[in-house]
Length: 81
Image 1 (cartoon, helix red, strand yellow):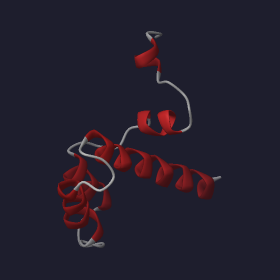
Image 2 (cartoon, rainbow, N blue to C red; image 1 turned 180 degrees about the vertical axis):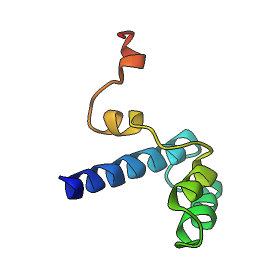
Image 3 (cartoon, rainbow, N blue to C red; image 1 turned 120 degrees about the horizontal axis):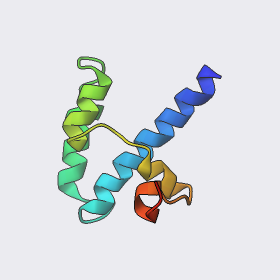
Image 4 (tube, one colour; image 1 turned 135 degrees about the vertical axis):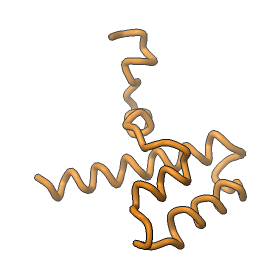
């Protein structure tokens, strides 16, 4: 089960990171690309991965992006509680 959830968490990070590009100028935005490269990809394991991700995104990853990617609308957007 733990192996499955590690893949699910990776998919969550991918979906959230991709939204950083869509929130900017699109998937080829140079500033977002540079930030991803400098804060996540080139630091390797010299910093905690979540700290690097926070530095890239400005916050922790949430599941909302994954839910949108999979076709679900988060409860906060649908007006339900």
